[in-house]
Amino acid sequence: MSVSNRISNMAPSATLEMAKKSRELKQAGVDVISLSLGEPDFNTPDFIKSAAIEAIHQNFSKYPPVNGYLELREAVCYKLKRDNNLEYSPNQIVVSTGAKQSLANIFLSTLNPGDEVVVFAPYWVTYFEQIKMAEGVPVVIETDIHADYKVTPKQVKDAITDKTKLVIYSSPCNPSGSVYTKDELKALADVLVNYPNITIISDEIYELINFNGNHESIAQFDFIKDQVVIVNGVSKGFAMTGWRLGYIAAPQWLADACTKSQGQITSGTCTITQKAVETALNTSPESVNYMVDAFAKRKELVVTELNKIDGLLCNNPDGAFYVYPDISSFFGKAYNGKTIHNATDLSLFILDVAKVSLVTGEAFGTPNNIRLSYATSEEVLTEAIKRIKNALSLLS
Image (cartoon, rainbow, N blue to C red; front, top):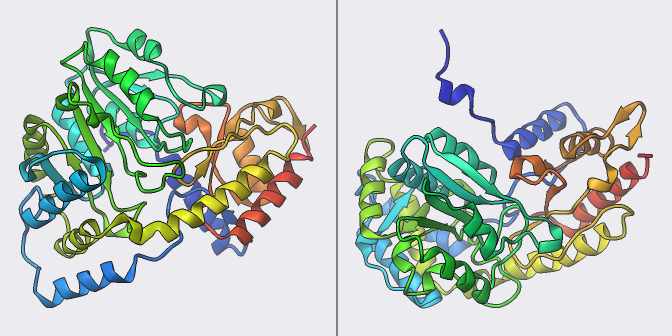
């Protein structure tokens, strides 16, 4: 007996693997600080929880439509108009069990074997594996800290071939926290409009965690909107990771295809979650500004303290709740007979010596980096960075 090739060839999620290692060490009594998972440390706001409780009392317990309750899809359309000045109809919205399923729906609905997907690196770990699972071919555009982890229009143009089917990126970005400006997105749109058969996946799950003005979506440009599918959800901005709800806003043909795909896999997502999210989206995003303010304060702390560590280079990201320092200066150094050859080695060294869990940049397509999540208290972050600094000082 054996598993399928698609599972054998699939890499496990690096973030979940590091989180698992952290849990195992904690269960063994080790004092580990986990900065590996992308999960807000806040609780879901009470007004959202109250809506869920009311939905239970109102007996929302039957199968919902595959693409989501109409009232929720209308709330998504309202949110897109209110916050992004984007016009969509409810039939162009597909609600799924998390943005991760939304992405899987898109890949399975668009890719044939050998189709290429241009992926901006650093990229979220799941993009790469889902593309492979759908028998597509990832074509990675590399960036680095000196470019603020953003691609150029020329890089995108040079990556496109006659096999290119999709382009995918996130802004604000997981793992770098970088945010594309309106002008930067316009420059990318000016290139991609010349390839009308390419669909652009704009992952906007961190939309609300933006420290530098309003969120910008590439879908705002009318001349390319019909090529764009927006992926979003409530896990990050509303601290609802466990509620499992994401959604897409897409051209009608793609929304229909994703509904068809989802109908054979999960059907509609949890009814109680849907009613809670309906309330969340109909409420002003200012209701969660307290989380954003806390993340901004933590970011300044983390960036300032990390940049005090010799050999570590950290930029100042504009969104999400990650920092993504370049740690390549430590390659070739050693401690106790063990040499650091790459970011994975350094991540495991920090876990072993400093008892701090983070994620290697190799999982995100940029091998000179590590990702730290600052979705935890300032006290914990201060202690974690102190431990990291002490551990790195041992390398020579």
